[in-house]
Image 1: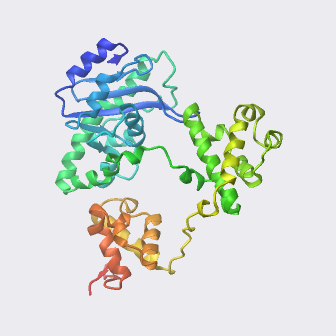
Image 2: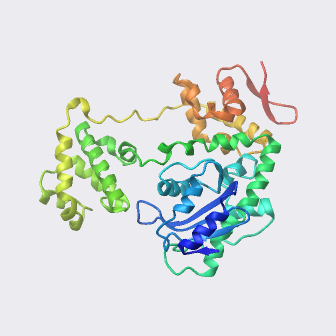
Image 3: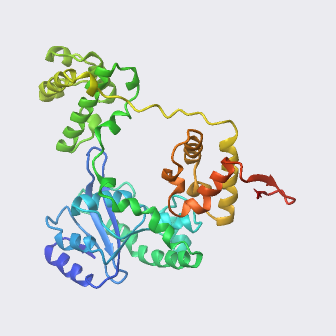
Length: 386
């Protein structure tokens, strides 16, 4: 069903009032805009299934109210971007959520598994991903495009049921709930803080503290402008140009217009605002200048990470899930760094939820020398108990 009118939407949502689960997917475009441009929202209860057109429908309130209902489980595959869209539309976080991609990883079907592969694995069906590069905001949509989109939720409900069955059998249902807990926090979907954007700019550590403060204020200004214009920050001013403007801190429009990569049209539009930001930043008191966090370049003792990686491999084989789901090399490095720098291990990711018992605590025991690793008679690596 393809919904393009208010009456159709109202009737469809009325049919979903008693549903306990809602499979949800979105089709969007985000190549030149700050926010996702939503082209379709697909919803299924298992019994009723539709693609809702937000381009043609100005009021989606009946559908959004269903999404906000805490009595309905919202099912997604690779939920992050869908949730980012819907949280913005609903004005609040959406709970409870179930992510089939996460669940599939936790039952041993593979990390980052695609929807087509999970449908084939769970249901033995092949679905074709022939419309991957569709511009979902262009109208009209063809019948094949709409069917392609609806398939993403039509099969999501039976996949969910298969996964729930397997998770319960393996006693891992609470693992999924722990993995999606961050999505219950509104801060997860808040606009990025300026300093986080600042830290992504290359060579910023070459700046003096006052010029770094100028850059920080320019990054914050650019982010606000990008939100207001709904465009990518780099389409206003690229990072390397912003860095050089901060380094030289011009106080004249003519000088500002001569920076390489700063287009005259943008200079005419926002040059005065940029100069004002620079002037304000230059007046910052010394005690309030931006200070960068210490570089996380801790080098761990040679061989320690490899030892823990071997243990993670053992546990992954025992649990029948991929090693990266338990602890990838980046998190192993972080764990060892935490230990060697005597930081609070309880705050580390590998000490949260189900991972603490299954991987975090044993790795901590290895680092403390309380247990060891050996190769047994069959050639397998295993723990040496004290």
